[in-house]
Image 1 (tube, protein in one colour):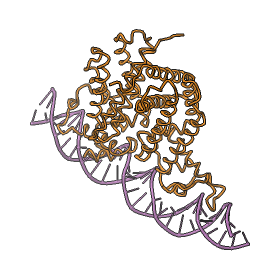
Image 2: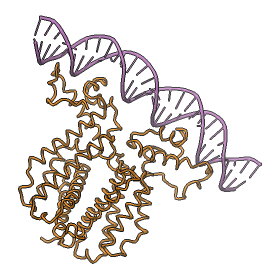
Image 3: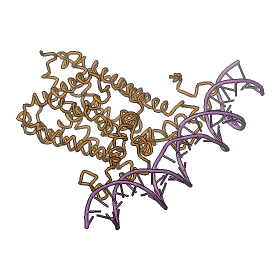
Length: 217
Length: 217
DNA sequence: ACCTAAAGTGTACACGTGTTCACATTCATG
DNA sequence: CATGAATGTGAACACGTGTACACTTTAGGT
């Protein structure tokens, strides 16, 4: 929907050097959502104020508050997909993969606190459009994981449907880990315990896979 | 906090027969949260209007919007705990238990759509007080499940810590199921597929338990 | 049949909100 | 260097909001 900026921005036509306003608005929204409750609970004016921008300037960059929110969600998952794509997970032993993936993911979540806090809050409380956007991205991740897992010998006896079911369980476990990391104080060392727990749970799941028989009946 | 009504209500002092206003306010809040976005996005006045009550009457029953929200959360989990307690799960074979629990839970969620939609939305987007209340209730459920599982022979080789970890995974899986049931249209038959998936995932987890070795190092 | 506290009502106020409009500034491009 | 689109600005509007206050009504315990 009219998000026609393939160029990084500030390359439109008469783009002003002073045009960090857009980024400022996005960051302001993230800060407010993180420190206060909820995206639907903060107003356009508060975002503008926090961004050091006059309210009307908002409309120069976003049609809507919704548009801002959707942009934030897209940005989050775009960069997450890249991180997860860069680390070619399919080329390492399954055992190490669990630990490595958990650490990679946890690290990324910590480095992008505000973005993930936003997504976690809006996943269920946001607009229909936002909820759908987030849901679709998660489905995408799940399918990608299923493809990756299919390459392992340990999963050769699993049907494609069951692979999706398993990936779904794994993704949900990792999402829960993220939510928990975001809930603890940033400079609290408790993260390690959370990661250990998630790691155990994933190992448990993969143990079940060894005994699993697809469509036994 | 000033929630000193052990009596079912309307037994205070000069309680009017006409006092369904409190219930009306709670129901109105649930309806609005369900059909619109979010508890923090709906106003006291809108709730009062929906309840057929003048705005100032709200204060006769709740000190705050927060108080209303907390009451709704407490109500939800109070009755959920009762349902789960009544069905004495520890007295049936493990295999049947999975199917039975999933069906029991799904049924209950469907029967209390509005309440659960509220809880799901506020779990991460709500006030700190609300989030904490929900979190504590879930921790309680997890511990209760761990106690129940400990009675099964299949779990005799699992340490107490690991039992918590496993229960945590199970609870998260069931929560995810609830979220999904709430996301699909009420009179859509898709629920069965969701329940089947959750059931598979739980069976997978319990398969892993068979091979699990607590504190192997 | 009273008394009294709870429950319900209507008015009022100060304030934050989204959005509009006309205008000022900036700056890459012709 | 001039042009014009993108960007930034300030005043103004109609409206919904939370809450305080003084008041009326209700109904149970005595």
